[in-house]
Image (cartoon, rainbow, N blue to C red; front, side):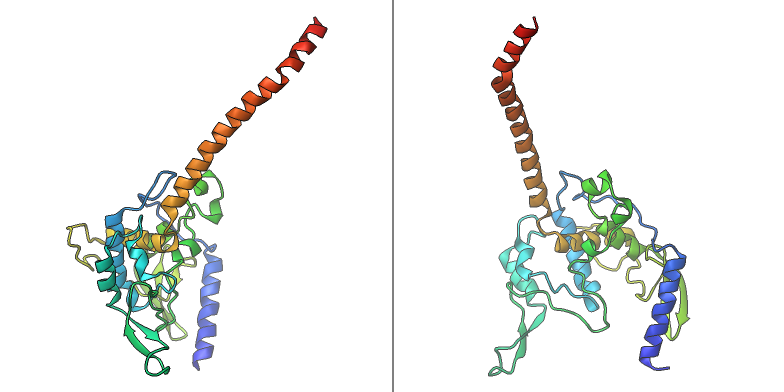
Length: 267
Protein backbone atom coordinates (compact mmCIF):
# COMPACT_ATOMS: atom_id res chain seq x y z
CA UNK A 1 0.00 0.00 0.00
CA UNK A 2 1.56 3.31 -1.06
CA UNK A 3 1.70 6.49 1.04
CA UNK A 4 -1.25 8.10 -0.76
CA UNK A 5 -3.47 5.08 -0.19
CA UNK A 6 -2.50 4.98 3.48
CA UNK A 7 -3.35 8.66 3.88
CA UNK A 8 -6.76 8.19 2.26
CA UNK A 9 -7.48 5.18 4.46
CA UNK A 10 -6.45 7.04 7.62
CA UNK A 11 -8.58 10.03 6.64
CA UNK A 12 -11.59 7.81 6.02
CA UNK A 13 -11.20 6.10 9.38
CA UNK A 14 -10.75 9.41 11.20
CA UNK A 15 -13.78 10.92 9.46
CA UNK A 16 -15.94 7.89 10.31
CA UNK A 17 -14.84 8.03 13.93
CA UNK A 18 -15.57 11.75 14.11
CA UNK A 19 -19.06 11.27 12.73
CA UNK A 20 -19.71 8.38 15.08
CA UNK A 21 -18.64 10.48 18.06
CA UNK A 22 -20.80 13.39 17.09
CA UNK A 23 -17.88 15.60 16.06
CA UNK A 24 -17.30 17.04 19.54
CA UNK A 25 -14.76 16.24 22.21
CA UNK A 26 -14.80 16.57 25.98
CA UNK A 27 -13.52 20.05 26.85
CA UNK A 28 -12.67 20.98 30.45
CA UNK A 29 -13.64 24.45 31.65
CA UNK A 30 -10.22 25.60 32.85
CA UNK A 31 -9.87 29.00 34.46
CA UNK A 32 -7.57 31.52 32.75
CA UNK A 33 -6.70 35.04 33.99
CA UNK A 34 -7.50 36.60 30.60
CA UNK A 35 -11.12 35.47 30.63
CA UNK A 36 -13.98 37.84 31.31
CA UNK A 37 -14.44 41.49 30.32
CA UNK A 38 -11.69 42.64 32.71
CA UNK A 39 -9.28 39.74 32.25
CA UNK A 40 -5.64 40.25 31.26
CA UNK A 41 -2.74 37.96 30.50
CA UNK A 42 -0.55 36.76 33.35
CA UNK A 43 2.99 37.75 32.32
CA UNK A 44 4.60 34.94 34.33
CA UNK A 45 2.24 32.38 32.82
CA UNK A 46 3.08 33.58 29.31
CA UNK A 47 6.79 33.24 30.05
CA UNK A 48 6.26 29.70 31.32
CA UNK A 49 4.14 28.89 28.27
CA UNK A 50 6.88 30.19 25.98
CA UNK A 51 9.35 27.89 27.74
CA UNK A 52 7.05 24.91 27.21
CA UNK A 53 6.63 25.81 23.55
CA UNK A 54 10.39 26.25 23.08
CA UNK A 55 11.42 23.01 24.76
CA UNK A 56 8.57 20.76 23.62
CA UNK A 57 6.17 22.12 20.99
CA UNK A 58 8.69 23.81 18.67
CA UNK A 59 10.14 20.41 17.76
CA UNK A 60 7.10 19.88 15.49
CA UNK A 61 5.13 23.15 15.37
CA UNK A 62 6.01 26.65 14.22
CA UNK A 63 4.66 30.15 14.92
CA UNK A 64 5.07 31.69 11.50
CA UNK A 65 2.83 34.72 12.14
CA UNK A 66 4.49 35.84 15.39
CA UNK A 67 7.45 38.28 15.32
CA UNK A 68 10.08 37.84 18.01
CA UNK A 69 9.86 41.55 18.87
CA UNK A 70 6.31 41.11 20.20
CA UNK A 71 7.75 39.24 23.18
CA UNK A 72 8.60 42.70 24.54
CA UNK A 73 5.19 44.26 23.82
CA UNK A 74 2.98 45.51 26.61
CA UNK A 75 0.54 42.84 27.71
CA UNK A 76 2.80 40.03 26.50
CA UNK A 77 5.56 37.95 28.15
CA UNK A 78 7.30 41.19 29.11
CA UNK A 79 10.80 40.44 27.84
CA UNK A 80 13.39 43.20 27.68
CA UNK A 81 14.96 44.06 24.34
CA UNK A 82 18.14 42.22 25.31
CA UNK A 83 16.13 39.14 26.30
CA UNK A 84 14.23 39.22 23.01
CA UNK A 85 17.47 39.49 21.08
CA UNK A 86 19.03 36.61 23.01
CA UNK A 87 15.95 34.43 22.55
CA UNK A 88 15.70 35.16 18.82
CA UNK A 89 19.28 34.02 18.34
CA UNK A 90 18.23 30.53 19.41
CA UNK A 91 16.61 30.19 15.97
CA UNK A 92 17.93 30.39 12.43
CA UNK A 93 16.01 32.00 9.58
CA UNK A 94 16.63 31.89 5.86
CA UNK A 95 17.86 35.19 4.41
CA UNK A 96 17.65 35.34 0.58
CA UNK A 97 20.09 38.29 0.48
CA UNK A 98 23.04 36.36 1.89
CA UNK A 99 25.63 34.39 -0.09
CA UNK A 100 25.60 36.76 -3.06
CA UNK A 101 21.86 36.50 -3.51
CA UNK A 102 21.81 32.71 -3.25
CA UNK A 103 20.41 32.84 0.26
CA UNK A 104 21.65 31.31 3.47
CA UNK A 105 20.64 30.84 7.10
CA UNK A 106 21.52 33.32 9.84
CA UNK A 107 20.62 33.78 13.52
CA UNK A 108 17.19 35.37 13.89
CA UNK A 109 16.78 38.96 15.05
CA UNK A 110 13.82 40.63 16.85
CA UNK A 111 12.10 41.82 13.63
CA UNK A 112 12.08 38.27 12.22
CA UNK A 113 9.14 35.89 12.58
CA UNK A 114 9.26 32.61 14.44
CA UNK A 115 10.28 30.07 11.79
CA UNK A 116 7.88 27.60 10.24
CA UNK A 117 8.24 23.94 11.08
CA UNK A 118 6.89 21.60 8.43
CA UNK A 119 9.10 18.62 9.28
CA UNK A 120 6.24 16.26 10.12
CA UNK A 121 3.35 18.17 8.56
CA UNK A 122 2.17 19.43 11.96
CA UNK A 123 -0.07 22.52 11.89
CA UNK A 124 1.28 25.95 12.74
CA UNK A 125 0.24 27.13 16.20
CA UNK A 126 0.09 30.89 15.59
CA UNK A 127 -3.71 31.01 15.34
CA UNK A 128 -4.57 27.65 16.89
CA UNK A 129 -6.34 29.19 19.88
CA UNK A 130 -8.69 31.06 17.54
CA UNK A 131 -9.05 28.26 15.00
CA UNK A 132 -10.15 25.76 17.63
CA UNK A 133 -13.22 26.36 19.75
CA UNK A 134 -14.01 24.89 23.11
CA UNK A 135 -17.10 24.30 25.19
CA UNK A 136 -18.38 27.83 24.74
CA UNK A 137 -17.48 28.34 21.11
CA UNK A 138 -19.74 28.09 18.03
CA UNK A 139 -21.41 24.96 19.47
CA UNK A 140 -22.89 27.10 22.24
CA UNK A 141 -23.55 30.61 20.97
CA UNK A 142 -24.69 33.05 23.61
CA UNK A 143 -23.60 35.39 26.39
CA UNK A 144 -20.98 32.90 27.62
CA UNK A 145 -19.11 33.17 24.33
CA UNK A 146 -19.28 36.96 24.40
CA UNK A 147 -17.87 37.11 27.92
CA UNK A 148 -15.29 34.31 27.79
CA UNK A 149 -14.43 34.08 24.11
CA UNK A 150 -14.15 31.11 21.77
CA UNK A 151 -12.67 28.68 24.29
CA UNK A 152 -9.57 27.90 22.25
CA UNK A 153 -7.28 27.89 25.27
CA UNK A 154 -9.54 25.40 27.02
CA UNK A 155 -9.49 23.19 23.93
CA UNK A 156 -5.67 23.20 23.76
CA UNK A 157 -5.24 22.45 27.47
CA UNK A 158 -7.89 19.72 27.30
CA UNK A 159 -6.27 18.17 24.23
CA UNK A 160 -2.85 18.02 25.90
CA UNK A 161 -4.30 16.34 28.99
CA UNK A 162 -6.98 14.27 27.24
CA UNK A 163 -4.96 11.17 26.29
CA UNK A 164 -6.26 7.92 27.73
CA UNK A 165 -3.21 5.76 26.94
CA UNK A 166 -5.07 3.66 24.36
CA UNK A 167 -3.56 3.22 20.88
CA UNK A 168 -4.57 1.61 17.62
CA UNK A 169 -2.90 1.21 14.24
CA UNK A 170 -4.97 1.72 11.12
CA UNK A 171 -3.52 1.51 7.60
CA UNK A 172 -0.01 1.84 9.03
CA UNK A 173 -0.87 4.96 11.04
CA UNK A 174 -0.78 4.89 14.84
CA UNK A 175 -3.69 6.76 16.43
CA UNK A 176 -3.96 7.75 20.08
CA UNK A 177 -7.23 7.99 21.96
CA UNK A 178 -7.91 11.54 23.16
CA UNK A 179 -11.14 12.53 24.86
CA UNK A 180 -10.89 16.18 23.76
CA UNK A 181 -10.21 15.57 20.09
CA UNK A 182 -13.27 15.41 17.80
CA UNK A 183 -13.74 11.77 16.91
CA UNK A 184 -11.70 10.53 19.84
CA UNK A 185 -8.52 9.50 17.97
CA UNK A 186 -5.57 11.70 16.98
CA UNK A 187 -2.30 11.00 15.19
CA UNK A 188 -0.27 13.25 17.53
CA UNK A 189 1.35 11.26 20.30
CA UNK A 190 1.18 12.53 23.90
CA UNK A 191 3.74 15.27 24.52
CA UNK A 192 3.21 16.06 28.21
CA UNK A 193 3.73 13.61 31.04
CA UNK A 194 4.36 15.90 34.01
CA UNK A 195 7.67 17.43 35.07
CA UNK A 196 8.52 17.94 31.39
CA UNK A 197 10.05 21.36 32.02
CA UNK A 198 11.56 23.08 35.05
CA UNK A 199 10.58 26.67 35.85
CA UNK A 200 12.95 29.02 37.61
CA UNK A 201 10.16 30.47 39.76
CA UNK A 202 9.25 27.06 41.17
CA UNK A 203 5.83 26.97 39.48
CA UNK A 204 4.02 23.60 39.32
CA UNK A 205 5.19 21.31 36.51
CA UNK A 206 2.38 18.77 36.60
CA UNK A 207 0.68 17.96 33.31
CA UNK A 208 -2.38 20.13 33.86
CA UNK A 209 -0.44 23.22 34.94
CA UNK A 210 2.00 22.89 32.05
CA UNK A 211 -0.85 22.43 29.58
CA UNK A 212 -2.60 25.56 30.86
CA UNK A 213 0.64 27.57 30.65
CA UNK A 214 1.29 26.72 27.00
CA UNK A 215 -2.41 27.14 26.16
CA UNK A 216 -2.31 30.66 27.62
CA UNK A 217 0.80 31.45 25.59
CA UNK A 218 -0.83 30.19 22.39
CA UNK A 219 -3.89 32.31 23.19
CA UNK A 220 -1.56 35.31 23.36
CA UNK A 221 0.01 34.45 19.99
CA UNK A 222 -3.49 34.43 18.47
CA UNK A 223 -4.79 37.50 20.38
CA UNK A 224 -1.76 39.63 21.40
CA UNK A 225 -3.92 42.77 21.74
CA UNK A 226 -6.68 41.09 23.74
CA UNK A 227 -6.33 43.37 26.79
CA UNK A 228 -6.23 46.54 24.67
CA UNK A 229 -9.29 45.38 22.73
CA UNK A 230 -11.20 44.74 25.95
CA UNK A 231 -10.22 48.15 27.31
CA UNK A 232 -11.36 49.84 24.11
CA UNK A 233 -14.66 47.96 24.32
CA UNK A 234 -15.25 49.09 27.89
CA UNK A 235 -14.48 52.70 26.96
CA UNK A 236 -16.91 52.44 24.05
CA UNK A 237 -19.63 51.06 26.36
CA UNK A 238 -19.12 53.92 28.85
CA UNK A 239 -19.22 56.50 26.07
CA UNK A 240 -22.40 54.98 24.63
CA UNK A 241 -24.00 55.00 28.08
CA UNK A 242 -23.15 58.69 28.60
CA UNK A 243 -24.37 59.50 25.09
CA UNK A 244 -27.65 57.68 25.78
CA UNK A 245 -28.22 59.74 28.93
CA UNK A 246 -27.43 62.99 27.11
CA UNK A 247 -29.77 62.08 24.26
CA UNK A 248 -32.54 61.25 26.72
CA UNK A 249 -32.15 64.56 28.58
CA UNK A 250 -31.95 66.48 25.29
CA UNK A 251 -35.09 64.76 24.07
CA UNK A 252 -36.92 65.69 27.28
CA UNK A 253 -35.81 69.32 27.01
CA UNK A 254 -36.74 69.72 23.34
CA UNK A 255 -40.19 68.17 23.65
CA UNK A 256 -41.09 69.59 27.06
CA UNK A 257 -42.88 72.72 25.65
CA UNK A 258 -44.85 70.63 23.18
CA UNK A 259 -45.90 68.19 25.86
CA UNK A 260 -46.87 71.08 28.16
CA UNK A 261 -49.20 72.61 25.54
CA UNK A 262 -50.74 69.24 24.87
CA UNK A 263 -51.49 68.79 28.60
CA UNK A 264 -53.14 72.26 28.72
CA UNK A 265 -55.38 71.43 25.74
CA UNK A 266 -56.44 68.20 27.35
CA UNK A 267 -57.26 70.03 30.60
